[in-house]
Image (tube, rainbow, N blue to C red; front, side, top):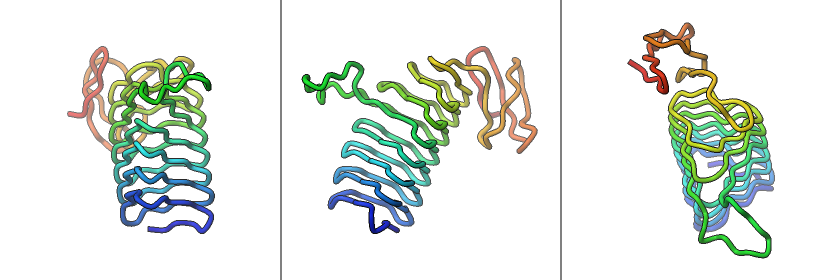
Length: 186
């Protein structure tokens, strides 16, 4: 594990082997972080957060209570997680946190916002600046405000043909079956 001298990892945080915590980042005492992760500058990880192996979190990201990031998730610079739907500074809502789960291999682009209480499916790709307001199917390519599906993505990060039927990724050769609202490897 590598912790930059300006970073703070509270006693009690569980941080896996080979994880790197860079400049001015803070990992809270209750956080559980897997192996081989990387946290860029100015990252905050709250107490009730679970992070899998090989997760990459770019600069200026706060991962608040009730967020789970599975293995191989990518969080782009300055993307945002929320954990309460109707926050007010004068009303305590900690008992109302809504759990957000980002499944294995998903990528969230720079400046995207993930509204709490949703699941982002395996290998989904959230475009830069998108606002996620509902569950996202596996392999979906989501863009806009609110985010809408405009296609499908391969596990390797390339776009998959979005017409119905079986398609092969031009980049890696993985085959996918595309139906109306789903894309699955075959």
